[in-house]
Image (cartoon, rainbow, N blue to C red):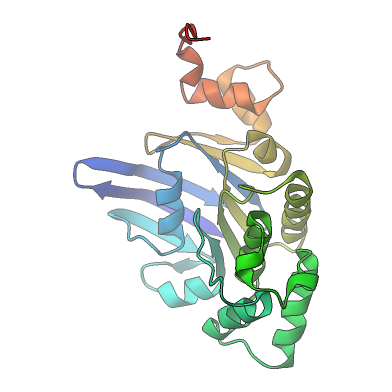
Length: 251
């Protein structure tokens, strides 16, 4: 469903993404992890067609992104790390605006908008201005709008940022439903517990290179870790556990 082949992105003297190759299957939740500055967001922006790779190939749903950019974007729902919302629109108006971008209209649109607002627990707020929404509500609204056109692939950069425990539980349930419907989810996150709980497979990127990939069990085996938590595996594979903390003399 998603295939990256030797994907590379360079900015002058900096290589942000370095020869990354991976494959994500239909109906799979794939977690993309890495430290700050590792290349996660750059990779996601290339996947979504926002950035052009320096070299390499991206294929989504069997289509080459460079050759079929518009058609691929019809099949993808994308949420960037800093999504933009028109705060002077109501929730319903914002959803209608997004629908118009994709050419969706008619009675089908009204039903789908209402269903998504109900699914994301926003139905009672549909006629309120987006500017009055909490951060978590805005996050849920942007997710619902990204699913409006029925994408086959859902690409999300940090989906749980700013969500309270109830909101995070709702999003996890929705992601599981997306997997059951055979939608492919490509998700970056710093929340390792979320990745461990949701993801079928995980890729770890470090300094632009894919340093490890597999199920949580496979990553633990590769790291030689007996600790049951993904955090210790992640720190080991990215070299962060080798750093001895300095004493906090100011305390």
